[in-house]
Image 1 (cartoon, rainbow, N blue to C red):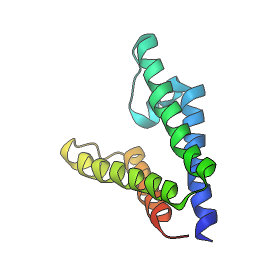
Image 2 (image 1 turned 60 degrees about the vertical axis):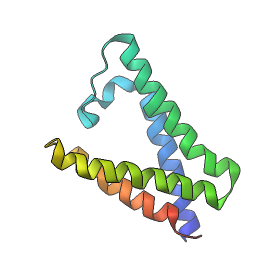
Image 3 (image 1 turned 120 degrees about the vertical axis):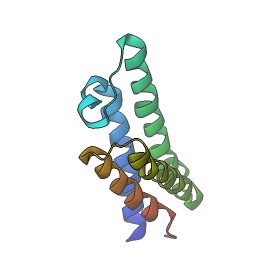
Image 4 (image 1 turned 90 degrees about the vertical axis):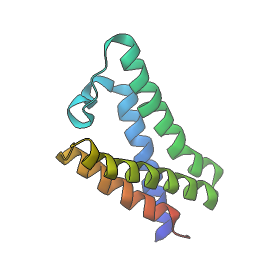
Length: 114
């Protein structure tokens, strides 16, 4: 069951990346990021798109427990920083809390032994 959840988390990461790659300007409402010109759009496509696609695809392509663990550690790291930042930056908005919950859930699922 854990292995199936890990695959779902990896695929979810890829889908997030694909959405960011294909529709970078629609993320403004959820992320709060406003791309300025072509450079800003390229950054969203590259980091939120390409990077997320590669991070999600690596465990599936490598078929290695270590790759799933690495992705889980990345999610937990992002979640830790986001959790602190919500309070430090006074950014307690629904989309930030949703992202934090997903990052913690995916992180835990991905670091569990399959």
